[in-house]
Structure formats: structure tokens, C-alpha cells
Amino acid sequence: MSYIVTLLYLVGQKPFDLNYYLGNHMTLVQKRWAQYGLQDWEVVKLDLAGGNQIKCILRFKDKAGRAKALGDSDGINEGVSVGTVKN
Image (cartoon, rainbow, N blue to C red; front, side):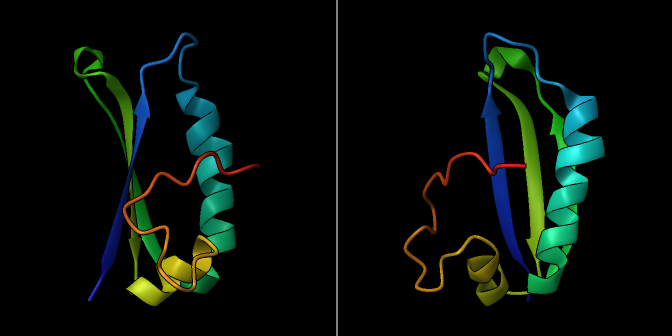
């Protein structure tokens, strides 16, 4: 059974660099987290009027893989914002 993580990026003062996010950040995420069962991901541009500009959906093979990828082996970060992933 898959385990899905959804990330929302709020509308900010600076424009969101979608080209960088797709071409650099997400390829790095795929490379680093494939070993933990990241199966695929999807990035969606949202209507800015809703307060969020980007939604990223990560699909892991299972919950244990998600926990390993996020450094959360005991599940304490589940449902909590984990901040910014450094490139």
C-alpha cells in the first residue's frame, strides 16, 4: 500500500521558481529518496487566490520508507510541517 505525502507552498513575496524546483530540487529528492521507496512525485500549480501556489505530492512504497526519508523513524513528524529541505 502506498503512503502519500502532500506538501503545500504558500504564496510568498518572491515568485516561485518552478523551473529550478522541477529541474534541480525534485531531481535531487528523487535521487536521494528512491532508496527509501519514493516511487514517484507530482507537482501542481495552484490558484494563488487560495493562498498556496504549489502542491507537491510524494508517493512512497510504504510508511516506513517515508519515515526513513524524512529522518523520522518513530513517526513524530507525521502530519507536521518539516520545514525546508536543503539542496
